[in-house]
Image (cartoon, rainbow, N blue to C red; front, side, top):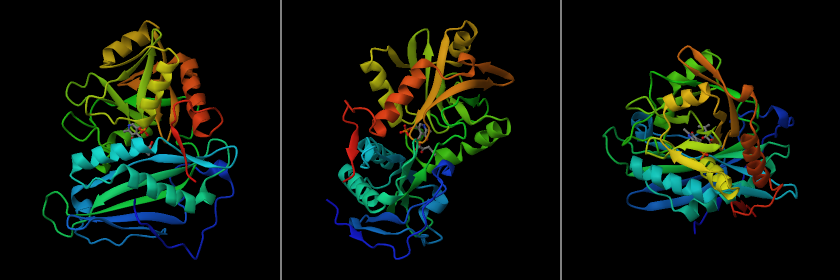
Length: 356
Ligand code: PLP
Ligand code: COI
């Protein structure tokens, strides 16, 4: 159990009045949570303080060598006004795995959940009320040794910030266009693909920019060695329904093990769908597109929830999936997941945790 010191703001900010204009990641609540770590003292000085800029040493490890990992989860307001989190233990465990990969300290699962719940409780009024909105929670951990030597860090800072969000894509639940990247790669086995570290996203930006300029929402990555197998989208895992079977790339080490991915798989299996986690080649996908067996495609992730893919571009070809419309399974996953998250339907899996 952490002993958390709380310092409340004396200058609360005005909350957004028009929740239809929230967008993603632009507005932050009144407080943030911080915990220091050092090799000598371990985790110490857990605190929730007014949201403010950090002051860090210009030689801090994170600024030079990318010692940074993060997580993303949401708090949802239910119909009875209570607030709940969705599978926060999964984010806590993934952060531990990311820490292990980047040689950052590992924050125990119960401390991760405790401090997030405390922060959300304090900033409960920031959890928006409108349909489809939530409080996005961004925990992150950075190495902050004050030296330019390259080594595992001896000082680190864990922080949590949060803020109200609407849909991640401007399209909302409408199908998005995705560009298959044929030049840059995101990750390779043995690298950091399975960790949620800032560097993975920095390395993705060039392809992301190219996709945006061509009118696509995000990039679909191919494997880094053969550039033959489908991996994941910029901020989502991907799933395809091919001849009645749901296929999603296996977790081979270069893909982020998404909480939404895991939840979709569990949900689909509970409803009797055949789900296969395996290698899926671009050739197989192209053949399925051409012979009409590719029935649906969607991305899944915390920020975007479940997002139908209506167009897939590869080099100068553009494939239209399911006539650019949302498919039946995609819609079912969206309705069931969001139903559980916003407490509109029963949660038979025990995925939600109340904040109070
Ligand atoms: N893949 C990448 C690269 C991501 O950034 C995300 C988003 O966090 C996901 C997949 C989906 O993960 P999750 O469902 O845990 O949000
Ligand atoms: C999330 O879905 O939580 C993400 O982290 C996506 C992203 C904005 C990188």
